[in-house]
Length: 239
Image 1: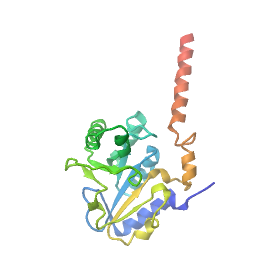
Image 2 (image 1 turned 30 degrees about the vertical axis):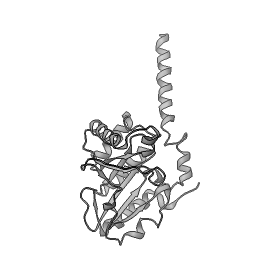
Image 3 (image 1 turned 90 degrees about the horizontal axis):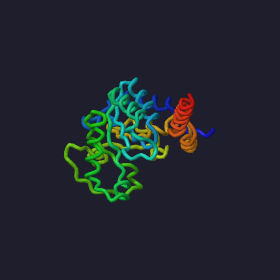
Image 4 (image 1 turned 45 degrees about the vertical axis):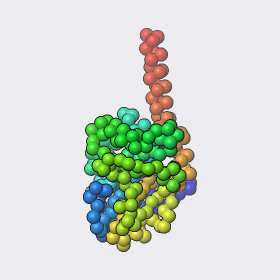
């Protein structure tokens, strides 16, 4: 079994403990000095995000989780997804919109109008006041010119990185080294993707394999439940 020892839950907990020794944790709206802004992009599955949220909650640490409106892997408005997102929110974490510029461009949609609309839908659906946005796959997708209401906070903006060390675990790879290497920095901005963190520290390839027929496969469970309902329907017809 291929593993990545830097991405176990135990390793994540250890990193949080080391950060907490020297720093406080802040939200994007309340950042100051000698603190850590902790962000999570939910690109593929909500279940790993819930696990990370629970780990942080037990440590009295709170962060922001960015949800894709147009994810090809999960529907944020399904019953199960809605319940998970509400659980994350109830713990004290915040929710943000992870917008996909490629979706807007491919469908000839106005990015500014769509972001505003998607935030309104999120706020109505989750009965919340969500005003945080982040770009999905910014190094791959085409950059777009945003002209949004001042109340909307773009967490990719320079003000959050100007005097702050930024590190990310994109594609299960820390560019300059894992979290422990940067605990001496007075201000940190840490981005993680919960899908890459597992109990056993599975490799990226194995995790992606789990998306088809494995524990992260939403279709497998849904099809199983659908078959059960259809079988019962046929039984009822024969009665």
